[in-house]
Amino acid sequence: MFTSFGKYILLLRLSFKRPEKFKVYWAEIMREMVSVGIGSLGIIAIISIFIGAATTIQVAFQLASPLVPLSIAGKISRDSNILEFSPTISSLVLAGRVGSNFASQIGTMRVTEQIDALEIMGVNAPGYLISPKIIAGITMVPILVIVSICLGITGGYIACMAGSEITPSDYVAGVVDGFDGLTIRVALVKAFVFGFLIASICSYQGFYTSGGALEVGQSATRGVVYSCVMILFADLVITRLML
Amino acid sequence: MIEVKDIVKTFGENEVLKGISATFQTGKNNLIIGGSGSGKTTMLKCIVGLHEPTKGKVFFDGENFTEMDFEQRVPIRTQIGMLFQNSALFDSMTVEENIMFPLNLFTNQSVSEKRDRANFCLERVNLKGRNKLYPAELSGGMKKRVGIARAISMEPKYLFVDEPNSGLDPKTSILIDELIAELTIEYKMTTVVVTHDMNSVMGIGDHIIFLHQGQKWWEGSNKEIAHTDNQELNDFVFASKFMQAAKDKL
Image 1 (cartoon, rainbow over the protein chains, first blue to last red):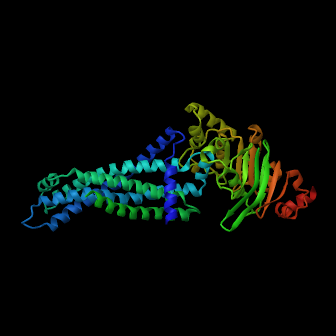
Image 2 (cartoon, chains in turn yellow, cyan):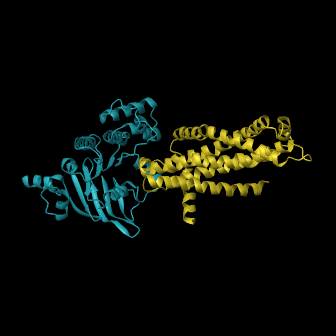
Image 3 (cartoon, rainbow over the protein chains, first blue to last red):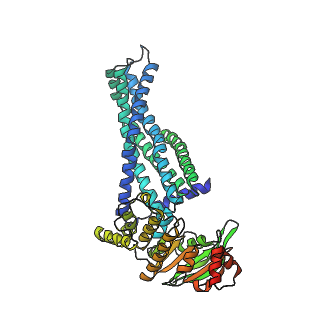
């Protein structure tokens, strides 16, 4: 385990060496940002709306008491979305979608000698392949989380309009009541860290693939599993430290 | 000129190369031949720095490549072209982008200059007008030729070729061999080819090294190979009845 961690740190160090030509790297960063950001927008929108709606209905169901104002459901739904559902669930989904793509892409390049071809040319392969992915991860995951928060809260509103547990006006009153900016900061810190973990762990798994198609698949699976575990661990640590 | 001095390479307990020394002359097609598992590709990878030798040194025109770090190797690596066994073209790039890739990273040429160079290289390997195709749209022989075009795009001093004929029909194999031989003369390159194709050996083997069980077993030219009394080399080169019959006629 310590050997793997050491290799991971060394690979990260190599990834952030000075690029041969910034213009070429910039194009690669933009390509990865579009792939991570725009490419994941659909799945993030779907899960955010449904989770936001389901959370609101469940909270309203659990608080069905004449002693508790219904607007509380909006407040709890908002904070749950901002603090947990949007950053963590979105990142777990992104680990599956983006992380497996990173690991299998780099793994395939390894087993088909494309990484060797880069090294022969004198290109710093970890820098060219991994740094754009990490930059895309740490920039696009926070943006996707912001989108997810907005859509999650919208999902809750749609659930209120469609159901009878809570009225839309009570929900909106709850959402705007007692808003604390700290929750957004926590969500963004989580998103930044999760984005880094997904990109770096999956790229590492792909980069050290050896063998053939079977091993590429195994690397992608390992990348996703390790990313998910590390996301949940980091979630706990950040929550403990910041709240 | 490339000099290899006493190269040893071990993987765990397995000693793949057992102290090989050789000199590869400029302007010649230097062939490394041998049976499967004899250490040909490992030797090639040790020379180009994809594997670090356990012992021994590699010199490129007198410069000790083995003792250089990654940064120090970059100037030499920009003078190296390599054709891989499965071509190793970048899947996400078109043929033209593949050829222009090293130019983008290591030259300050304008886009039109780089495109002109890509067109010239494509024309040189008889693939004019295939610029916008992706590697997945090419046949095996075309991939090899694009691989050669990418390898020569930076006008290299050293060309390394790993199994250029694997998976190709005999006619295309000969075309690839002839192309490698022509380019070696044209660019005055030091060319090192790893192969077990006997047509290549007899056709372009100016200088041949035969590896057997990780050791240099024989060294000579394609003219000398037919008359050697080295038993292992004879068993390897003239393994088929056809080659044996050809030898008997010599």
